[in-house]
Length: 253
Ligand SMILES: Cc1ncc(CN)c(N)n1
Image (tube, rainbow, N blue to C red):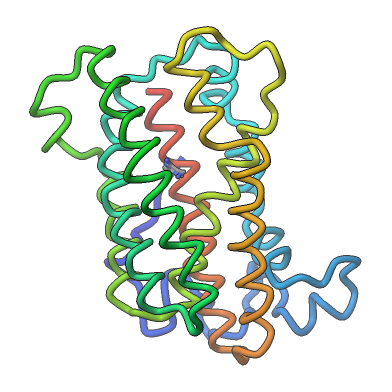
């Protein structure tokens, strides 16, 4: 697939927001106000998700995700690049702690940052990359694939903006879409830890609750943003969905 420029060509309204910023172009999804008037589930996060098709479904049903689930994926290039993704993602979680609008919302970000990303997930990466024979250069400063550069740029753009809704949009897309493919895995999972732990990290009740929190925050904040603010959030969400698709395409080779 073709990956469009992310942060580099983002205009004031965010990446790939519609030309008039109101979702009225020929290929633009409906605005939130229009969409919610007929939606069975009018949640703001569901508007974002449905407007991210066909990329959403392409990621959740991607052949590379299926290969992880069946224990047949070649994980080396993927995990080397993803470790660099996770670096920028961790910084974005820190930005969420800082930008959240209330104490009770900062707490889950801080907890996830300390208990999962910098602990369980970090340990997984260290063991997996060693198992895959990745050397120090590949772990610390590998040559970045173009999609990794673009994804890091998008996360950095969201982080630097210090705008909570925009930060949330990128975090929520990345986690929710991973829950989407990983939840398709059924027992018995592959025995090899490389696959089993990666699936476990992105599925199950704890990860579902984390994604539920991220969606809940968007549902709480999104409806009162105004049309331009909503279009800006959608721009980041959709661009992240495009990049997730490109990331699995890259991993597949
Ligand atoms: C590219 C990508 N997207 C999402 C995730 C889930 N944190 C991830 N590890 N990598």
